[in-house]
Image 1 (cartoon, helix red, strand yellow):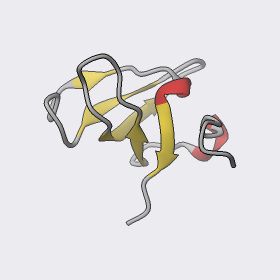
Image 2: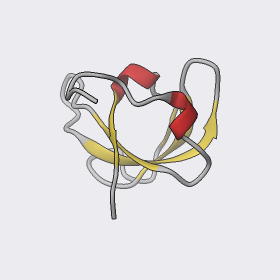
Image 3: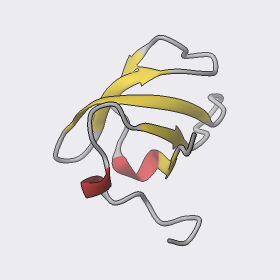
Image 4: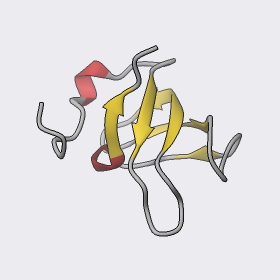
Length: 68
């Protein structure tokens, strides 16, 4: 997978931790997936200024699956 290719949504599941791309004034950060929808994921930011906040980022914002 090239660096700019989005993660395949089929690889995402509840509990997956992904790296979200930086957007506007929000830096790249980790995000735990709670649900996978048709065009986005729902879940919570684990790091960064939005830590603990719920969000529904589009698949295109997912940079990579986080490897522990």
